[in-house]
Image (tube, rainbow, N blue to C red; front, side, top):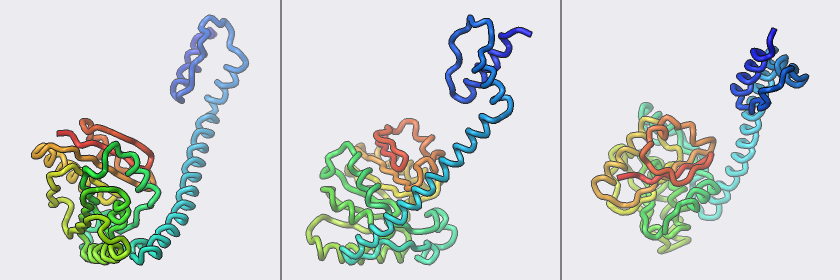
Length: 273
C-alpha cells in the first residue's frame, strides 16, 4: 500500500476543518503524528470535540448575555429613577393597542435598548451629529430618543405604531424636558414605519431590532427611495443585543449599501443614491 493516498486523505481532513495541511510532500513515510491524527479523524473524535466546543461556546455566550441582561435591567431602572420616566418595563405589543398580526411585525414586544450599546453605536458614527436628524424607527417608550439628547442632533424623531407606547413616550419626553428644558426638539409620531415619509434632511435612522425581516427590508427600501428622490447623507444604525446576524437575510441583500462599521451587536450602513 502506498503512502500517498493516506497523505492525501489527511490533507483533505485538515482542509475540511480549516487547519493547515502538511507542507513536506517529499516525506516517504507517514509520521507518528500523522497516523495519530488519521486515527482521530477516522474515529470522529475530532468532530465530537469540535461539536462539544461549539456547544460550550453557545452556553458561555448565553451565560454572559443573561448576566449582562440583569445588569442592564438595573441600569434601565436607574435611568427611570433619575429622570422620573417609564422606559424599563417590557410591554407585549398586543396589549399596547396593536392587533396580533401587526404585533408579529414588531417582534411581539417592546424592550428598552441598553444604554451601553446605544452609545457605542452613536460613537461609531463618522459624522458631525449636529448636521443630522435622528429618527428612531419603532421608538416604543422613547428611551433611545431620550438618550439621543446627549448628542447635538438637529431634531429627534420617534416613529411608533403602538398607541399605548406612543402615549408613554409623549409623557416621558414631557417629564424629561422638565429636567433638561430646551435641550433639543423631540417629535414623537404615531405612525406605521411602512408608511412613514422621512424628512429631506441628513438622517441617522436608528433600529433597535424593531421589526421582522420583511418589514425591516421594506423600510430600508423606502429609505433608499427617499435618498434617490432627494439626495443627502442617510445612515442606518441597526442594534441587536444578541447578534445582528439574526437578520442576516436582510443584510445579505444590501450589497450596494456602504458598510461603515460592523460589530456583533451593531451595524452601520450608508444608504446609496
